[in-house]
Image 1 (cartoon, rainbow, N blue to C red):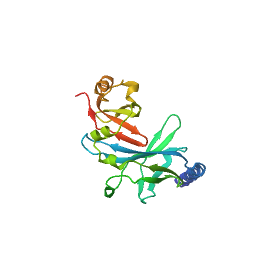
Image 2 (image 1 turned 90 degrees about the vertical axis):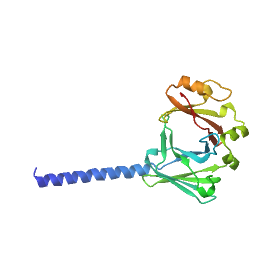
Image 3 (image 1 turned 120 degrees about the vertical axis):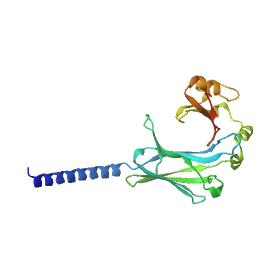
Image 4 (image 1 turned 180 degrees about the vertical axis):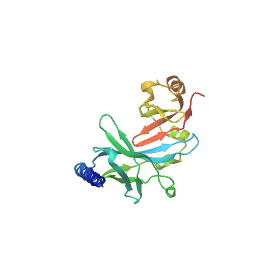
Length: 228
């Protein structure tokens, strides 16, 4: 095979590969439009210290019936204000049970709105890498007075039952070691101070945080250091 013949051969080979690849992408895109099964959204109040007011953020995830690895971006639109958020790098979760999620855990409001997310109806648009989209809806409602409370005042105001409590344990690198209802593994503690239980069960732990759930609201309490 001469150099010229070899050059023509490889050009034709590359052309065939390109055509096959494009055809594969075309049929893949044509036959697999994204599909949103449901949308779950929660308002999160994150308390950095006991005496500080919380940072409010919106956490949402789309339960997808299609491959989330093909997501291009997600747009979130509030119909009351016209505000729009564009998430170009959404968080993806793929469970062994074939469930797939795409979403974001740190959607925040404009400073001009006192850092509070608009309430009301939201539309969420999911766009995949093939240019196909799907959309869903969710509603946001909360008590604006919660954003004015410190962690101490919140616990005085709210009556959280034991079933609403979760605990997250972290290493010094902030890697999550455990997240579950504390009574399932750590034992009950009337004052909800699980320090001894955490230190006993997780020697590598550096701190933990308590989560309180109330309908579509999550309150994250300040860090409690352990192993000191």
